[in-house]
Length: 246
Ligand code: 13P
Image (cartoon, rainbow, N blue to C red; front, side, top):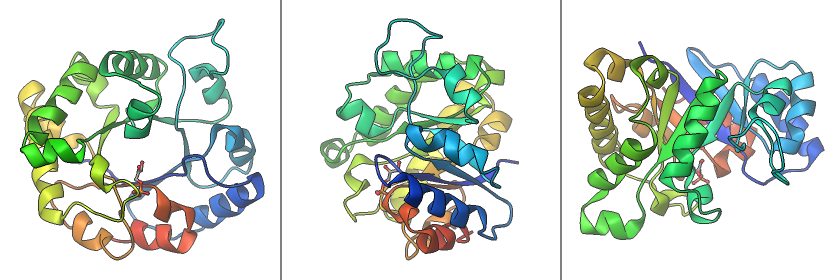
C-alpha cells in the first residue's frame, strides 16, 4: 500500500546554524510508519547530509540538464552527490514567481525520474478558479500536461501534493471535505489514466496552512496520505505534532 509522507518545505528560510538545529530535532522525532522528508535551501544540503540523520533530504529546485552554461542553476547529479533523494516539481511559487509552465515542468519530471529521484509533484488552483468551480479541470490539466506522458512504471516514483494556492501561507486551509474531494478526484484521474492498483499505490499529500490543529482531521481523510508543510515545518514541535497526526 501507499506510504504516509510528511515533508517540510523550508523555502528560503533559516541560517545554516538554524537549519542544522532544526534538521537534528526533526531526525529525533518519534514517528511510526511515516516517511519524513525535509526540503532545505540548497546551500545547506551538503552540510545536512553529512550529519547522516535519520531523514530523507529533498531539493526544492534543480535544472533539467546534465551540465553546461546555465548560470546559477544546480544539476540533478550535483544534488545527488550531495545526498538528495527527493525533488519538488511544480510548486506554485515556482510556477507563479519563476514562471515555470507545464511544459517545462514535464521536462523537470523527466530529468528527475531518469536519474532515479523521487518526484513530489505539486498541483493546485488559485482562488478565482475555485470560485468558478473549475478546480477539477484545472488540476487535471496540470497532471495531464506534466505527468501523464509517464509510463506505468515511472508514475509509481511520483508523489502528488495538492496545494490550493489560496491556502498557501494564508492561514486559510482547505476543509477536510474540500481536500478529500480533490484527492479523490486526483486518485480517480490516476486510476483512469493508469490502473486502479497503480492509483491506490500513489501517495497524495495535502499542502496549504497545514498545522498541528488541523492536521489530524485532514490526515483522517481516506485519500490524504500526508502533508507538504511550509510555515509549520520551521518549528520542530509543530512539525513533530503534524507528523504524528495519523
Ligand atoms: P504553508 O504550510 O506555509 O501554507 O506552505 C505550504 C507549502 O507551500 C508547502 O510547499
